[in-house]
Image 1 (cartoon, one colour):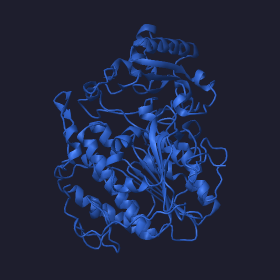
Image 2 (image 1 turned 45 degrees about the vertical axis):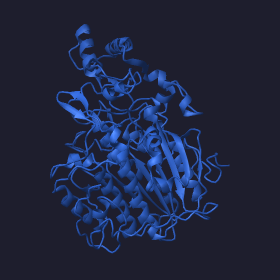
Image 3 (image 1 turned 180 degrees about the horizontal axis):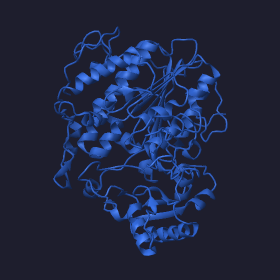
Image 4 (image 1 turned 180 degrees about the vertical axis):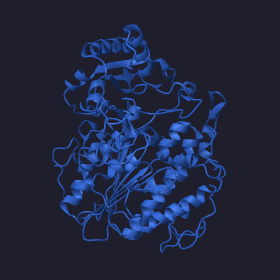
Length: 564
């Protein structure tokens, strides 16, 4: 792997890692691969450590599907190799239908599904919003004057429930709650309302809420990243195992993917974000905060949540099955390993839970080539604006009638028309969507609201049950429209993103869940569990009860059986 020239960053602890982590690791001097100290050995013992851990670490790898984990787990020899010595749950479920970043992250440390967190999508329509832009971003304060869904003030106010960190701090005010992520919505949804440090990447640097003072470690990280971005990045060499995936896929309009190796021009922050280096920066900052704040070294238990976002940007930009993702999986393993090496070196008794906010689907052009004939791109006519325009022309109504994105998901009917017109428009929209050959199911808000909250194995839930798990009446749409499996809601891939997620199907719902603590007896639980089980499971290890949540406690001493 080609490594950029490291930058000297004043600090006291050397960071034993590869790739850009060495650059951002707050080392007293740059580390060459041959100079980096060996990884701290990870001791094992026959039984889990006694007493509560001193530090809880929750890692979310954005768009890290159970399918990706299964494909690459045999090749992991670094960070994932350590975690796989603990409890492995290959079939964790973001069990709801709204498989997007914000809803998914809202489940991980709360123990609640989106129906209770209130986070029903990354973006929703609020026709009563006090501004011209009626789209509301999930991690913003829409009441800020002059704001919009693309120029917003980051806020936690839309999250309706507390996180594990908040509960820990309520039980012991000495608890430090720290959240770091590549996306603001990941940092906010996992950190919650009461945090000591919360930092996310804004496209140029790591930032936080207005008025917060940046710790020295954040300043050092931003300085180092700026130095990296100022220089071009040569293409990364791929592991030999990735060679078979190094094939160009024609997307039309002169655009191809499948042969990218993350070469980057100087100053290209967008390309940096969709590369392994982005995760490096997040893990390095998280490691620096652990070091500088001495997390886990006080009388209380602390918590840090880490949102690694590069896998998602790479999946959207290049798809999930090309050489780009293959390189990312190798580098993610190393980035995670470097982070865990710092934790091991502290000597702190820490506990890790790793999962994902959702899965992902590859681009249909490559899926068709690999034996998935039903894969296709969505018809642009399905866009609510287009369906609404056609209905308006038929009914003689000039105002926009339907709002939302190309489904899978919520569609809102205009409140600017009369109740009688709304009823007619709704009936017309249902008929038109049901008649389209790419549509699997159309549900009304009333149908979903009348459905009991699902229980039992999430893989057996019907589509309406999956929709119910992410339905919150004050915010959800008037209609939910689900496309058929493998229909990608990106009509044209020649422009920006080429692949995505967001469907109610298992390739988007199923994610891995890994738990590790030094001395923990390893096991693999092959049955299904849910990401809402993570928070109550971690809470149990520190003697904190979480009653009334959607998730259940998993007994990490008994191979994943429910806690008694």
